Amino acid sequence: MDPHLLRTFVAVIEHGSFSAAAQGLGYTQSAVSQHIAALEADLGTRLVERRPVGPTAAGERLVEHARPLLLRLDAARADIARLRQVRPARLAVACAPITLTPALTMALARVREATPGLTLAVEVHGRDEAVRAVLTGAADVALVDGVAAPSDPLPLPDAGPMSTLAVAEAPLAILLPADHPLARRPSLRLGDLADAHWVDAPDTAVPLGQLRSAVRSDGFTPHMTYDGTDVRGLGALVASGHGLAALPLPAATGLTGTAAVRIRAPRLVHRTEVVHPRTPTAAVRALVSELNG
Amino acid sequence: MDPHLLRTFVAVIEHGSFSAAAQGLGYTQSAVSQHIAALEADLGTRLVERRPVGPTAAGERLVEHARPLLLRLDAARADIARLRQVRPARLAVACAPITLTPALTMALARVREATPGLTLAVEVHGRDEAVRAVLTGAADVALVDGVAAPSDPLPLPDAGPMSTLAVAEAPLAILLPADHPLARRPSLRLGDLADAHWVDAPDTAVPLGQLRSAVRSDGFTPHMTYDGTDVRGLGALVASGHGLAALPLPAATGLTGTAAVRIRAPRLVHRTEVVHPRTPTAAVRALVSELNG
DNA sequence: GGTGGTTACGACCAACGTAAAGATC
DNA sequence: GATCTTTACGTTGGTCGTAACCACC
Image: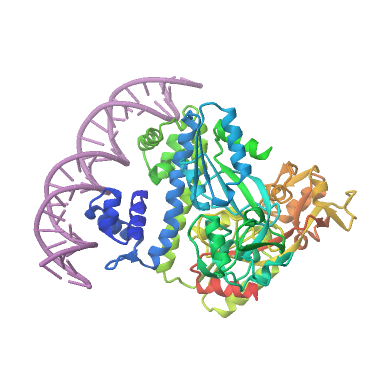
């Protein structure tokens, strides 16, 4: 199970075609075909269904292993590279949309002021992608958010040793249309809303999957999904009755046509954590201490 | 970063010698030397200090990546192999010592009775090794234990998708010498014991590291360590004043010369979980339903 | 001088590309 | 018949072992 073969395999599944994968990887069709054949011979099972191209049952299972495996391989390389590299004064921040709060931008401003010649880069990503960026060295530090019980750590993808530190906690709130019957309540129980209509906006609000696992419920099924990263866009969707969304209270307030109601039970908070490699640059250390202190 | 190279690298670090690693892997010294040289050239850093042989800083970092990487590689192969293999009537159980309770042995007896011709194998391991055994296919199911907040899952090593299910919860107790000043208390606060003398018996009792992370304290430093897997042996150590140990209440009672006192705060339980692949054999399904129902 | 890691070199095998064949819509 | 995958085959490059070399106790 050579990583090259796995990488090719994943590319084939993603592209849905041998030739497209070949083009993407800079191989010939033939090489890709040989890679897949080698993998299938090695594992003794057909992994890819041809015509149309798609994963078999075993192939689907393999993809679930291959992706984190390749990620960790990249992470290992980046981790070693960081050790010998004397970094320029760069600070690349990968953050999930909600985490880009005044507290963060002001901390960034203070860091920039304190370190002359600093090149600052902020990229907005989904949570997993932000962590990925740190692991592979594309970013120096990530800010991710999610719901958790108070003082519990966020469940993060485990692709290697990383340092995490909680930097902000906010009450969890539900964003509802201003004219919703529950909009004037002072607080709500999350369990009562399991069967409501929800907008799943994983990159903007709290992903419904996180609510489901936090409440240990089978509810919170998406009534519609929103792939954007814009809170106002989500607010518009909620205002026009497409469904509810869970957000940290500060981010949920002040959106026209909506109301934000705090969650009373279960005891959950919206937490933001900084994630950085265990060999942080000086700029990362400065940012972390700014955020923390 | 070919897995072969990583495997060789880990073997070199573990053996502390190129030639010993070569012998262990079935290579020549020369091949091992070339593997290390190739890895070092690839990553652009010296990974191994020679004479004496040991990891450099970068090497230590790489080992931390390589071990889980190789484990997951094995896990992936085993996972695929399970899909096509029509398993014989075998049930290999890898369990941590404390989990071998009457509830388990009786469930095993019922499964054996229900499935004629079943070959039963029980291996006692440390927790991580038990999970490893399931991942690599050496065992069909594992029973692991640990402390967690009520209804929180145990933190398990993440080397691939697995099904886990809580099968037992017991109050957490402290094992102390019968003549200890605190031995007659009805209950104790764990936080008050952070600075006590502790016996770290990771394979027999709750590892101190788990207590530390559960209480989020820096205490619980080992006064001595016990590598065995025998609860009576641990009881003897505690009875003679070598230190305290944390155990599930049922396992801690009835050991001569000791007393078991329940933990009152923080709210923690000792939980046992079954861990099995997502393609369980019939025997595993039977065992799980026996344990659960 | 012995133990143990490195380097040189040759044999072998594996991986890629080209090109022709085969399969499927 | 067009598109896409497989197979055949030749070239290239990499990997291993043997053996000579070198370094450190």
